[in-house]
Image (cartoon, rainbow, N blue to C red; front, side):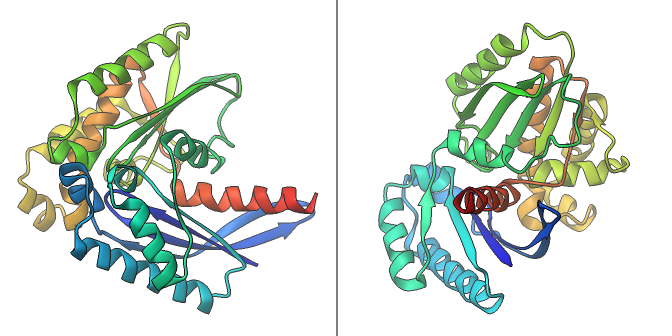
Length: 295
């Protein structure tokens, strides 16, 4: 059995096809195929509140290609979600209808809180100590989702319109930064020691650059020094010398800024970086939906 997840983000659009493994009542999944297309929908959505004809055409073609791949892989269920960029684009609903007509694919625009819930459905805390307190930080192109967990339970969760593409386009607002700071300080104040859990493509890349061992946390000091190291290179040199992909080389700097800022506010000394994200959460959501159906 195979499921598919489509994550239509502000920076890139991803398709994850996963094999579902059932063993003695336990259901897990193994990643089979991952396709990533850097469409940068956020550049249009955050500046013009409208997805341009060119990017709309590219998105429809991408969705049609994803649908064809899902058919070839004989996917039995899928879920396609659109996040911050499509939430802000006034022609988002119109584009959803066009994708349904031309690609025969159901794409849903989801709210920030739903997005946060899907990310945490990926069971990224499964190996973490439930007696400890964790602040989950997911940074995307258009939004940052924060969730605080203590003793294995969610204490607070909120989505903020601060993201890498938004910062690059100077569309992040001081008041939103203040709201995020107030959220972090208010909810983390009762806890003496808090650990970070970071998700998203940028924090995964930063973790690889840090040379830390898998499963080990990344310290705030090391993340800050990585930020200074990457910032010392021009965009061109981050691509040519550091060998970063073009669509990663620019967004990694504001991403690092968001992670370090939130960690500083919460007095977090280290952050765990499990290699999961929105697409993993969608697969897990499908597993839970279909399990509930059977029960």
